[in-house]
Figure 1 (cartoon, rainbow, N blue to C red):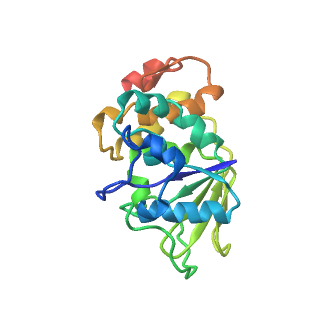
Figure 2: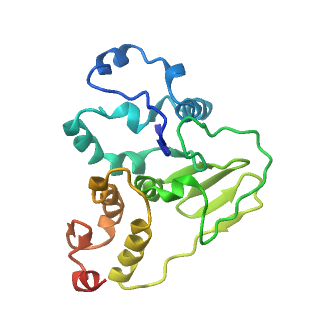
Figure 3: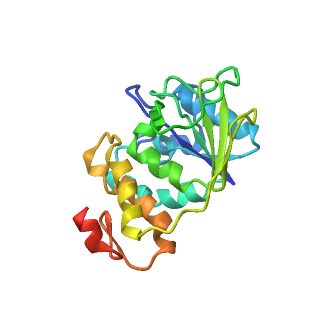
Length: 224
């Protein structure tokens, strides 16, 4: 069992794994040199009794394109198989951290959300794939799984309804509409960051995934 972290890097210098330091990091990793968000994630993972955690800046060689491409192709499996995904939901920069004293001021989800994590393309994939996710807001934690969302003090408890029957092309169009409004640091990531969402839907539909479109209902999608 392992945790995975979804967060915004921001502009702070990452203590990333590279080809120069990967060998030494197999022997020793000074966690106090990590940005605060990563340190907080380690604290939470330990508190949950989890011995392992996956964090992109540590687990992917950031200066090796081949390793990045290989690991990026596995991210759908990583986030969908994580025991829990920890979400630094409000932090705009990894230096901020996400552990705060609780005031139990619950956040009720609305049509527009101000939190940093909801503006990033990669984070959409990571949230979509999670079997269970623990959001850290400034004053409250919120747990979400594939059937319900619950606030720390249970003042917000929402059970997700079963989806209505819609044409597949319409549903995928809604996904793309949301995704198209999100930010990516590298424009080349637009299809890799979407592929995990497609992977999560692949078992539900027949047909191939074709670079942002599906073979199923492709005429409708091309029109969109």
